[in-house]
Image (tube, rainbow, N blue to C red; front, side, top):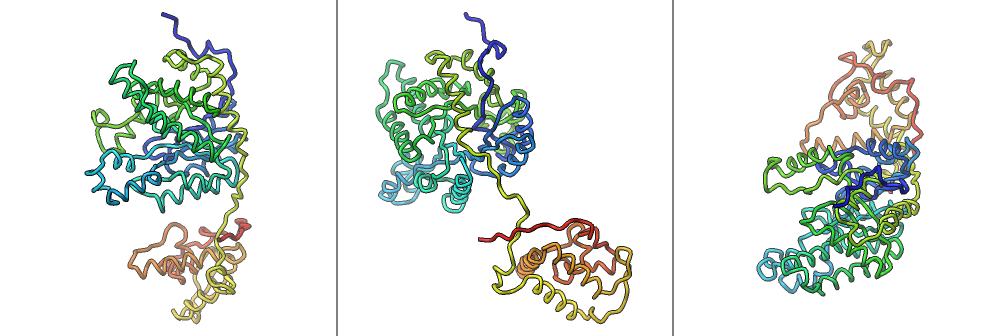
Amino acid sequence: MPQAKTPEDYKGPTDFVPLHCHTIFSPLDGCASPQQYADECAKRGWPAMAATEHGNMASVPDMYFAFKKHGLKSIAGIELYYNDYELLRQKFMEKGGKIAVLRERDPALAQRIGRNRHVTVLAKNAIGLHNLIKLSTLAYTWGYYYYPRSWFAKLEEYREGLIILSGCLNGPISHEIRLDCEHRHHHGTDHPRNPKRDKTAVQYIEQFKEAFGDDFFLEVQMPCIPELFDHEAFWSILAYGHKYGVKCVLTNDSHYLSADDAYTQKVMMAIDQKVAVDDPGLFYTNSEQQYLKTRAELWATFHNNGYSAHVKDAVFERICDNTLLVAERCEKLHPDTAPKIPNWSTIEPGVDPDERLRELTYNELRARGLDVDETRWPIDGKMVTYTEQTEIELERFINKGFASYFLITHDLITWGKQQGWPFGPRGSAGGSLVCFLLNIHSLNPLLWGLSFDRFMASSRGGYQLRVQME
């Protein structure tokens, strides 16, 4: 028996870009934070990384700032829940148009409609980021059925600026391959390939290739899960890539930083499924390999776990180098991260928000009879009347560009109270008389000697607020 290879035996290049990773923003599935991933990538000298959360893009801001600290590139991505419903819709309607009816008449079709596959989608540039956000939004608002789902027509419509990887073992292409392998496993290895599965896999490849061209890559993984026929999927996808001229790229579907975190991830999945961690019904990836592997560790996995049986080392190096190719196509984003709030004039056209805030506040001051109250209260080292304190706060809000913010907050809370929702002061906002007059909270700060400076000190610099509202 040949001696097992170790990462130390690897003499090739160390450059690599992880393109399929889950952070803590894949709830109860990813164990590492964006900052932890960024620190690890910087330590290894890797230029970039893609966070691909399950059905959401919540990690994009944290990833951007974490990687920016190290001067590295954060690639915005998502592991999209992909569904074939559009392709099957006509058959679905012919069967009655109801899942319950379909389960009785055609259970196989019902399962296919209800079952989602995974497709990895990355943003190449600002246009791609915008389209990725649009796809994610539509998946929740238009395609939600247990999960936020998307269809090929939507991917094609918003394809500009996007790179598509074919997905993990639950991707549409690898799934067809695995079903064929499972069929042959039960009928003997000499059993011929299922032409239906092969045809479906090829249809997916041709469909994505036609829509995305060179920005479509076949994704291969080495999760070490023989019961899922992962070796056969690995070899077959590489063969399909060679046959149909589609580049293959190696990913590791990382859910945690090191192998030691595998059990933690299993516990998290048990919590998510509300079962004990040793429950035989727990659904989890039966592998400890989904950590952030180095290229040398991937090479050792490639040789020690049977993946190299039909694949040359040169192919392994190429699918690793293709991660760098994908990363090079993705621009380093430079989003405008300045604070932004809507302008009240877009809600009330022609109305100046500064004047509107003054008008509302003084109307409330007069309605409560506090404009004629000459009582002086000790606030922030000064003795002030209600009118004087109101003017101090209004000038500070307006000078710092916050008039629209307070008007919108007032509008939202007023509507909420009309619905019977309870509200109360939160934190230092209780020290603002204007917030009290606008019914943002119901605590009179002058009666209790609460500090307004603690809420918004004059010494703090104002914000250059860029007004942006579609």
